[in-house]
Length: 502
Ligand code: NOJ
Image: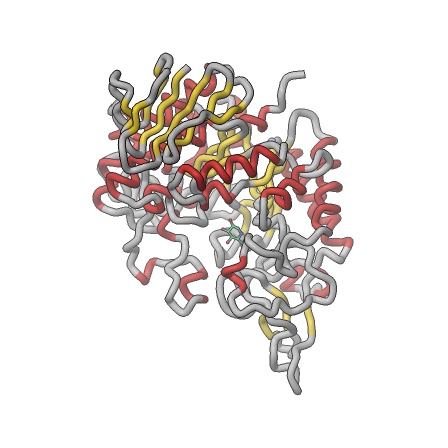
């Protein structure tokens, strides 16, 4: 049997609202994605993951779903979704859609119709119930509870417009199994599971007893995340996935405290992959990357690697911005794409887009901005519409302005500009993705190198990255396949540079 496609797939994350606009309303849509499938096929990725495009008031960019089986009119229709899936398959691209089971929108029929047993309601504390039921904090800031007109409180780990579903209710289980089937019937190849570690809460909803819970996210056990009970849910989901032909899969967004806890989500009868956010969080040093790579590989679970997504500062900026950030991003791409396992590429990283740090206050839409009392500008800076061409009101994204303004200097970062330049980020991604498909890889083994240098081999294939500030001399370099910055024949690997050879 050949290996399942997802094990070493390169998955391109499409943030639909910001990818390509087909109808000139300033927001990306499914037909826009469809029109750019040739670009994605040519880039050399294996699959696309679409961020939520379901009916939603967009209180949290679509992660507040009002109808799990319908497309929001701003993104298109169900027919558009079916057409996109079909066309993607024709281009040899698999399609992964997002599923949001921890919470719905407050505009979901269940919440609007007052089906209280599907959500988490509790009486308040204090003499008149005027205090929240416990000390849980919303990930977006402020208490995780909102008081109802009846005087009790409902739980929302995210915005108040995102009430948490009650997974103790069998109706909720049945509904989500049915939603999975709905999209599988439409032809999707898999699901990205939002807050996959959140659905089950510790019995009795105990206090955390810590003043800054958001500091602890993904680092320490919390009574509302990564509870053992979530795994029972995924066993039933796996049965549904396995009942369909083809390798249907699911990838968990699970912020667990460590690689071992994360690996539990990908036991053979559960999900297929879990994002490895420790890689994304690693500082730009050789020991930091070595540790997270070792941690991932030592679990024996299917590996995933990701540098950016729609929730974090784009990595060109995280790695220092400007020329340094650019060089490091190029080197990081070579590192990530050389590792065993599958890789998730966030739209625009192939163009080297930086985070947009100076969006005007009045355009900010991320609920974090309001909920933090205007101290956290939120995640809009990594969601700015893509520049496709070097001219036009939104650089080819739409016929008019986009829903967020692009920086003026993005014309030179546009796909059209980069397409023809061999030195561009786009050309690097395309070349490396082509090579990756052609190469055969053996077993992973670290190379012994100076402390600032990270290197490994996989059979005849070698990848070496200089994360230090000084050039290093390499001995025994074979046939050079690609380098992220100039590598001369003198065997000197400059700082912030990666090299592949075989
Ligand atoms: C994770 C999603 O990636 C993020 O964008 C969203 O705000 C939260 N989950 C809540 O759904």
